[in-house]
Image 1 (cartoon, rainbow, N blue to C red):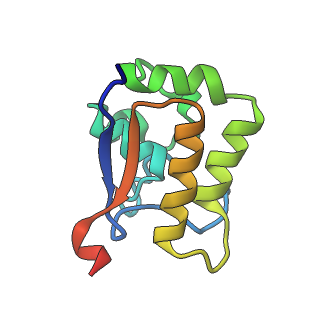
Image 2: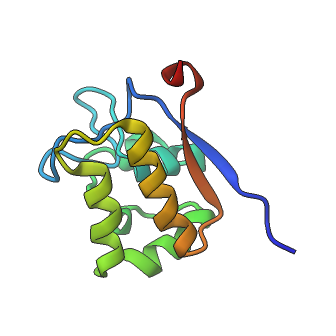
Length: 123
């Protein structure tokens, strides 16, 4: 019996992506944007204050339980680079395609959540 997947919405207005790795953060207080893993941290109960200025999941104290396996699996591995690269790379990848790629990686490692674009962004 498999656990039900939680869907976390990425709102294009506040999703920090496609700007390269330098300016990417779990939460960037200057404009209120979060990378995909920052959005996941917020969805699982972390505060913007606890994420502000941190670039990686491994920097977060008291990581939400559903994300703990991600810390163990990704930090310092090729997988970390893959997730961060998909989110941060500067190219013409559409948001929808970026979400598909992120979800493929999350599925490959057995995470309990997936991303979806916020409904009105898909219209």
